[in-house]
Figure (tube, rainbow, N blue to C red):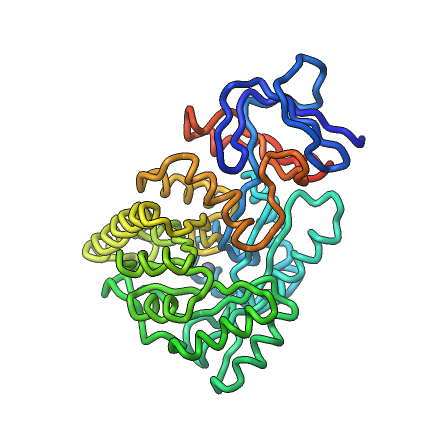
Length: 389
Ligand SMILES: [Zn+2]
């Protein structure tokens, strides 16, 4: 088949909602050749709604978020490569079922992310592609052992980043520790200071790589903004002042509500005490308020779930993340942009907007999310090039 005709009632093109259908999208040799009013002629696919394929901006493809048992999660870090590969392949299936066609992995030390990137890019019928950083960078003995290599001497940073950038799509930095939910803060000082982080960013940019930094808490956020990282990941304990600086510098924010939301929703697993549950709720509410402020100030918001974290399941978690954006008060078009056109643009990828001349990279939904947001959970098919699945 060299031509694929889709009839859709409505669509979101990556920026604008088109609700005056039906429309006819003709794809030839994998490229969108026309988007017109439907003429009633035969079509290969019929759908209520389509839009560019979803982008998951932050996940760990080698980790199974559905595994809730702490002992099993810890034991898994000693699993062999074939076992991890199986987990990653299942995660790719889950992602596709949710309509995700671009995945940005956020690091693993076992090389599973690179292997998945190769597996997808060498398959002409693959329905998704994966961006892989390989490993991130961190300081010795600090947070991030499962996903980062250690940098002992700051003077080694340019060489280390240069080496990593040669095989990475993006450069991941573990800038801060994890959140201490009981204390309601972030553990430890930032792993790199602003000068060191600026060196990392410059070395990455020299090789045309974007940087994304695991970062929560004001100390880390100040360092990330001063050094001009391209994207702040998590960003808990955000402030409006930081958001204004991010807007000025065009620094993206991937807020990853999902892992913290899961801890709040299932406190009995750890278990968290009542006061910590209150802390978790406060952290989440403040996060939502700052996502609304980020939208107001023009910070480029990008959707990413941190899937692979406990309780954060690949595929469905990205959709949950979109609902967290909606709950924060963001309009549907903004929410969809955060998971379609915006990340592709920020990362220098080809546009997947529903427009003539673009490679087909589409998700079909069983209804319009502009009419009922639940349709976001109703992905029926993915079309990428001439592949349909
Ligand atoms: Zn992560």
